[in-house]
Length: 267
Ligand SMILES: [Zn+2]
Image (tube, helix red, strand yellow):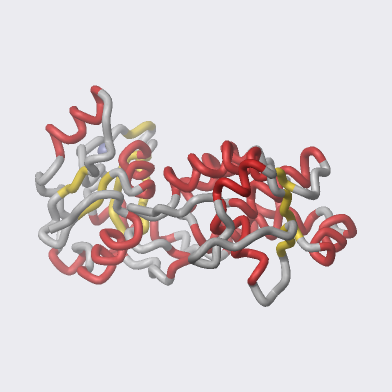
C-alpha cells in the first residue's frame, strides 16, 4: 500500500521523498481497511522495514531503532522522516514512466482481489493508463469462469439471491474467487461464488465470508443501519447453494478466505 502511494506521488507530483506524516495520514487508514484482520501494522513498519529488503528498492533517512528494532512512531512523526524509492528505482521510473503502471498492477495483482483494485487506486490517487494494461490483466484469467459459476448458482447472488437480468443477461452479478486468483486460487467452480456487486465487494474486503457449513458470516466491524440489516438478514444463514454438491465451495478455499481475508471471527 505504501509502495502504491509512493508510485502515485511520483507519477502525479514528481515527489521522490515521502514525508512520514503525509504517508501516515493516507496509508494508515488504508492498511486498516485493506490490510489483514487484527493488523496492528503501523505505517512505520513498511516505512522503515522496506529498506531492509535485499532488492534495495527503498531508502529511508537515518533514524534510531527502538527495542524491537523498529522505527519509533514518535521519532517518525516528530522529525517527519523522509523515505522513498531508492535512487536506482527512481532512475528506472524516470527513464521508463510506463514502469510505474506495470509495477502498480503487479502489486495489486499480488496482494488484492480485482474487485478492490479501482478503490485502492482511487484511495492512493494513482490513475493508470488503461488499454494495454487491462489487456495484460484480462488475458491471465479464464473467461469461462464467470459463466460456469453464474450457471452453477442459477444466476443468483449466493447471499441475497439478487438476479436482475436485462435482455436475458445477468447484470451486476459477478463470479467471485473465494481464494484470490493471484494467491493461487484456481478458476474452478469450487473456488467460486456468484455474488451481486455489493456482496462481492464486501466479500473481498472481508466484511463477510462463508464458513465451512456454508453459512454467511458478517464481520463485527460492519456498522451502520445497512450493516445491521446485513447482519440481521444474512449472518449465520445458509448461502443459496449451487445446483450440485460437487460445485459447492471447497473447504480449503473457504479456509483460506476465513484466515486471510475475513475481518471477523469464524467458529
Ligand atoms: Zn447479493
